[in-house]
Image 1 (cartoon, rainbow, N blue to C red):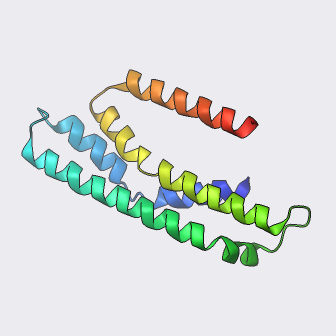
Image 2 (image 1 turned 60 degrees about the horizontal axis):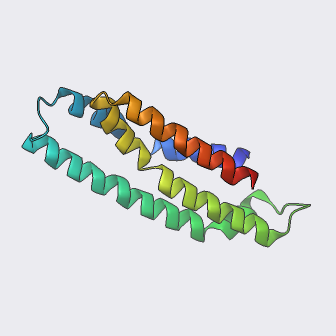
Length: 131
């Protein structure tokens, strides 16, 4: 459990304030047809998804190295730990761009939609963790 928390915090630090920038610029835009805003969102969209793919692949392929770094688990087979780290990699790769889209919804003051999406995703994560 602590490994996923450490990785989640580390991935959050890679955001470098881009989510706040997205929120501020979307809130500041007077209309949705603002050419500068469209260009900025397109650039940030590409950055978020590229970083997500790179991060996910790097973590996925370094799962065995992470086990060597942390030391073998005593009661869990090594292959299961590798699979768990690879699943964490997939989770973080999917989770990271969510900050970008959340920033857009917050900037547009669509908090009802954001809260509904967060509730749905938390429910799915809870169900997935219990089955």
